Length: 121
Length: 107
Image (cartoon, one colour):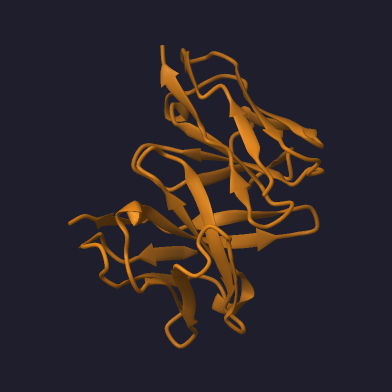
């Protein structure tokens, strides 16, 4: 059974650093890209970027480029999302998602349960 | 970025009703359009991919249509578990973008 299990909710202050994680099981970790998706309190979904677990090649959405860092640890089949300096506007729910591609399309076929990040002074 | 505009933003319907949600892309995206359902407190789950293909295990009351810039998601007979938020998402070009969601509420 494919599972993406995310780390627990976090409450942080502006300017603090944070890393959240997504532990993957049930398929070969290096076979699929992992994306991160933010959901704002008002429900909007935003794709942040993706990482290829084979070589850690990343692509960031311009909206998030330079503010977050994606990484993977192949030894533990874990993907991570890191901030070095949080802002109040980073408050939201963060999902990791597995990308599936075939001849017709690419889409997210499995999602983590989400990690709620609250940034407040 | 490719913009995807969903409508309506919300609708009220009853169990057994037929419901259609639309999604319009700001440019031609062929059939690179996916639909997700998000139940309260849960992560999104894929329903339809490549505009018309039903994902494994998704009930046949869900169907997708369209190509190019205009797409639809139809639920032929609403069930209690379908009262949720629905999102479309384009995978034609990065950055992948989502519609702003359609909330389906009980009338």
